[in-house]
Length: 486
Image (cartoon, rainbow, N blue to C red):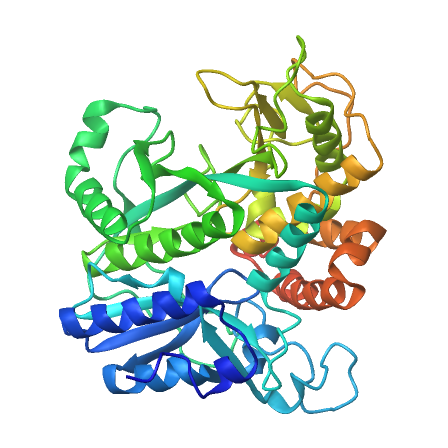
């Protein structure tokens, strides 16, 4: 039998190591033994949305040898699906040769991510890295960008572990099977699905409230654990129809993969069973409780394997931990583009809401932007960034933390004292809009140096186009407020 990957694009450019070849052989056996008919080859775009193709069983061996092609313009679109950058002009510096003319990119499967979908009959699922046809990594591949920052962190002597804590809302469509579909050009306004929440809200962690959702909880538990995701808990949150899931902490790339897959899994499982799930931070009707993504992070020493944030005295953090924390605070406004990349997410930054509204840190204080969780019960000290929204691109969110934290370590920054009243502290406010965050990112030289000025310009160009569409839209509030008044 010819080894998977042999004799094609993958082998020619040396894109797999021995571990990948071993995993590829196992995948081919699983496909044969389970009789899988199709496999989804997927990658994360700039918005953290899965894109890709479903291949038939017969086409899979060729894809393992030579990857799967897709239009490069997929990495140049805003959230509406509109291509923002001029791919056909041939003279835009943000559209280098690998993207000009909407030519192909190559999706190279990471064989260690293969899974069998529990909810789709005889279907496999695999995540891919994005390369150009000459074999070089695609400059705008979010997974590749995170890997690059983690490699720099490794050179500094550390590895990053990440724990994922995602909140989301689940609804029932008002008329199952009749949700409106917008048809037309990208960005054209259309009706949102009419939905009703599954719970009334206001009863945090109410056991009977969660029991009323036991059918949904069972579906999610079966699907997520069947997908081999490290699910720890499913919880009833404060808002109407609001839930939270947590995943075990893992190495940063695997944790980002987990977050990407768990969001897609929740939405697909819900849709197939008559529900509508959304990771939008503040959907209409959710004024009492927006959703967040609380990202837990800690460093391990590559030399000793020990927890690098654990203090050696009475302090809550080691010097390394304090420097890393100070970096998160110093670059928080710029990093907000990555932690909160949607227009909607900025409506979550409100006082007294369990969401931060300013750049402060506290010890086990859930109103602060960064909550320091001291070492306890055998677990190492960790930092919890509470500024993120659940729709954030997992790779870029985590990469932004590495960029910020490493600068704090390199310059030995000090975070100052912790706050006990985070909503009254005299401190910088978090950006009030996506536009303000984009200005902060453009002005931050550390991100430009770490990610590359072209990468920063790529993401800000796309997000500014999205923000401009938002500003141009006449909202229902404006119509109600002014139409009959002036």
